[in-house]
Length: 160
Image 1 (cartoon, rainbow, N blue to C red):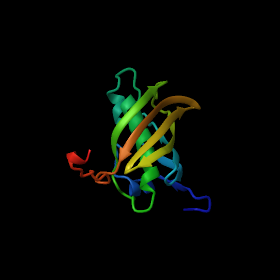
Image 2 (image 1 turned 135 degrees about the vertical axis):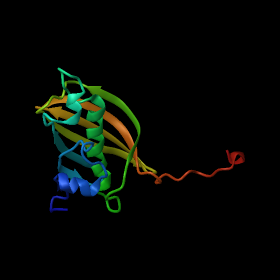
Image 3 (image 1 turned 90 degrees about the vertical axis):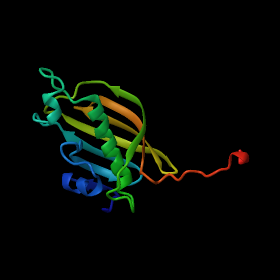
Image 4 (image 1 turned 180 degrees about the horizontal axis):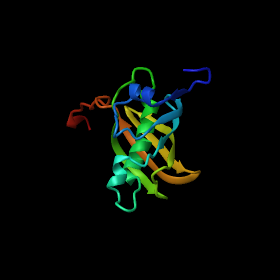
């Protein structure tokens, strides 16, 4: 990390940390990742993105679930940049408070801001937001997990 304790990751460096690949990589650049705390970055929506051709013909826009995926991928970098987590896969186990405020169109730049809210026993809770031209476009709260990081509690029913 640099002197200010954050990482800047271009697309090639993002690929070192996470498993998503084109066309499903929904982030292009991470301007500021503070491992274990927060991440900021963006996705440039090129006019030829695969989903614009099918969502919706004559009214192309970024699907809400792909907006959510962009928020999740940026958030995952917060955990993947921590020691020992480079390249690990994280899975979505919970989401709520999904809101979509405006269409994200071809040519837009989706700016993403995410914070790690809490972590407990391998579960990581985040709040993330996406903005286009300083207007909130989407937001979500969700929980991610690294597979195999949660160990089941072995208890005899009689102990309860």
